[in-house]
Amino acid sequence: MSFSRASRAALLTALVAAGALTLSACGDGGKSGGGGDTNFVAGSGGIATVAKGERQAPHQLKGETLEGEQLDIADLKGKVVVMNVWGSWCPPCRSEAPYFAKVAKETKADGVEFVGINTRDTDKGPAIAFEKDYGVEYPSLYDPIGKLIVNGFPKGSLNPQAIPSTIVLDREGKIAARALRALDDEELRKMIDPLIAEK
Image 1 (cartoon, helix red, strand yellow):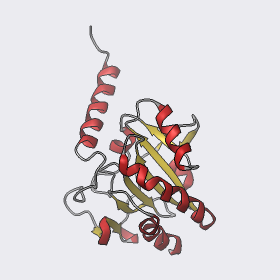
Image 2 (spheres, rainbow, N blue to C red; image 1 turned 135 degrees about the vertical axis):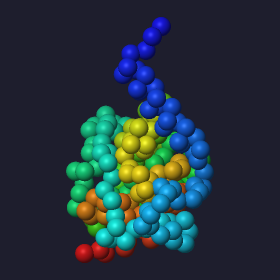
Image 3 (cartoon, rainbow, N blue to C red; image 1 turned 60 degrees about the vertical axis):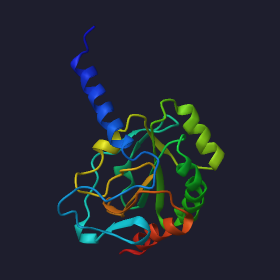
């Protein structure tokens, strides 16, 4: 049996994504990555930030949500965007989910949009049940093999390297902050509030 080129490419992408996420799946994260001159500063509590003039835009981050709608992160420019990489199978994701649901509601009026990136759930059912169980009302892009995670962020930028990971974009759509572990509501606000206040 022979694979077509498209099938081989899809398989290779899946293997790369699985390998990248297996290294740090569902843990407290590790060192900041990217190598070389990354222009970001690791802050207390494992939250890394980038100065306003040094931020990079992500690559294309769009696709189908768990609910079957189309979503493009680029369409949210002008808002602070909180992207949370999660899986229904991940215990730290379950511990942080109620905080994310709470802060998403509290900050909506301040121009903050939350978007999940659901990964490594091979079926949407458990992920949809997870959102219902934890009161998560914001959309999540469905990324079962990690293509968005691997291809969506420039090399050397603050990119997701663990599950859970949280990436925050400023109002210009540029990567401003990252955490590579589960967060509570106070830690999440420490990432978001300075970006809400930016002019």
